Length: 191
Image (cartoon, rainbow, N blue to C red; front, side):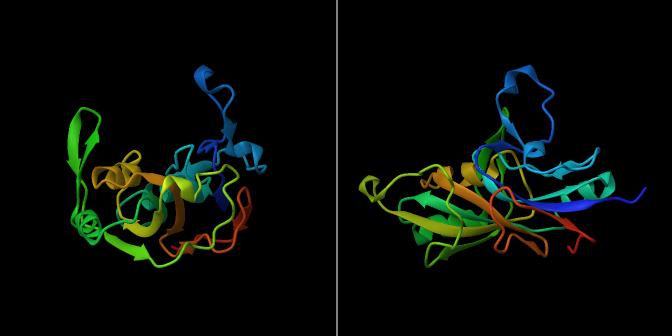
């Protein structure tokens, strides 16, 4: 069987799954509504419903498992509530304690940098807020791990809740200038 691979710009408001197999998620938007993916296609990793950006989809389970390991970096742009301080950036770089179920997990040291200007991203479709609610700032954060809602938990711990989260890179695969909902089939995955 020849495996097929895709990259997708997951829009805000979609679950990172192709079919609905749970009654409680009956009215949720799914990736299968965006493109006619072949049977057996799976999303590699997940982005929560309120997050957007790069997803790799494949019919190859071994490739999916490999990409989810800490061998590959995942880079995110995060819009934060407030002007992020140098202390908060340093703390994020060193690792923070976040809750994971009933336990506490310390994140691994990571690359974090302030973005000097708002990144060129498509409109989210749903308004975040306006300047009357105070300033915001953007950071780039690169992880080799991916715990449930990790970036959002990390920025909240240092006092800057995430308002918008966009994954822009997995390994050497970039979101580039894709539009929300756009899917592209790849000849091969270049990680």
